[in-house]
Image 1 (cartoon, rainbow, N blue to C red):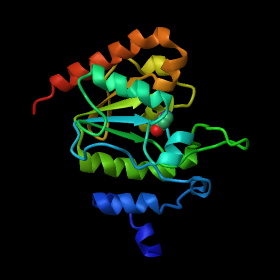
Image 2: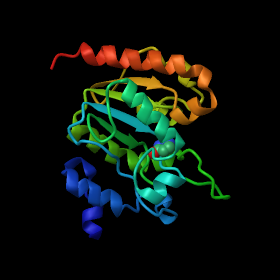
Image 3: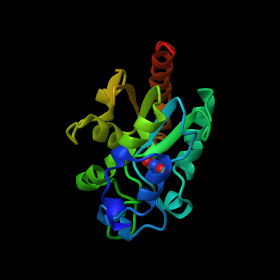
Image 4: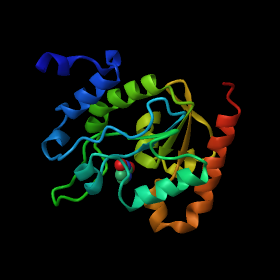
Amino acid sequence: RAIASLQSPAAMDWPRLQKAVAECTACGLCRGRKNTVFGVGDSKARWLFIGEGPGRNEDSQGEPFVGPAGKLLDNILLAMGLARGENAYIANIVKCRPTDENGRDRPPAADEVAACLPYLQRQIELIQPTVLVALGKTAALSLLGLDPSTPVSKLRGSVHRYAERPLIVTYHPAYLLRQLADKGKVWSDLCLAMSTYANIPE
Ligand code: URA
C-alpha cells in the first residue's frame, strides 16, 4: 500500500485513482478530514465544474457542493440544461477540507494545491471533458498559475486554456449567494461557456 501511494496519479485508472485519493496523505489536510471528496458525476461527462475544496458539509458527506452553494450550483446547472451526476462532473482543486485554527473553512494553501492537483489532472485526462468551468478565485488561479492578487473579474469574459481544453472562469456560487447582484455576470460567463461548447466539433 505504501508503494502504491507513491505511484504517480498519471498512470492510474479511475478506480485506482479513487482509492489513491481516499488513502492520500500527501499533505497535512489528511489529518483533519472525515472524508475525502473525490468528485461526483459521470466519468464521461462533457462538462467539468471545478470548485475550491470541501467545506464542512462536503467533508461529512464525501460529496462536493452539497451545502447552500451546492444548491445554487445545481440550479445553475439546471438552467444550462445540465445535471449533477449526469453530463456535468463536479470536482474541487483540493480533495480534503482546509480549516483554520478555529475550525472554520479556509482556502487551500499553495503547497496543498500543489500536492492535490495531480489527482484533478488525472481526472481531466480520464474524463476528457469538452469544457472546464472554474468556479471562483482558487480554482481559476490554481489552474492558470496566476498571481494570488489577480481578481476573478479580470479573468471573466475570455476563453482560457487548461490541459488543452477551453476553461471559462466565473464567480464561486458561495460568493454569488452573498452578491446576488452579480448573477447576470455569472450567467453571461456561462453563456460564453455554452457557446464555446457549441463551437467545438464533436
Ligand atoms: N465550495 C467548494 O468550492 N467546493 C465544494 O465542494 C463546496 C463548497
